[in-house]
Length: 118
Image (tube, rainbow, N blue to C red; front, side, top):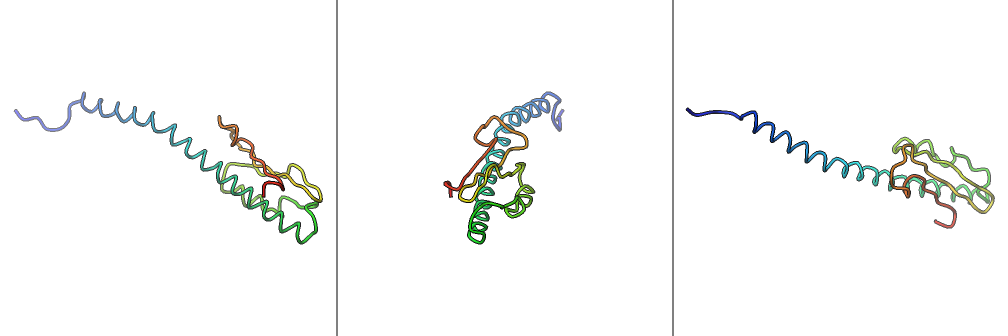
């Protein structure tokens, strides 16, 4: 007698293999997503720093620049980071991006740049 189809054991083996492959690849996928968001946060910080440099050229210093001048609200729409101005005076600034959900990677939890970095 010819049997057609799959037996229950064969189906369970395939499901188990899919589960094993998923459990191996999913953490890798999440790490890749976190790294790409971290890189995007760094890029966004440099964009904000460039806006701050333009602000300083027009206003003869960094003092008085606000989050709206740097378009932080626009940058925060794309990635899970909150952007802030940590310190600012006439000649120096430091801006930061803080992860909303910090991960194991401490380098991506809080990213800062200042006027010396650009």
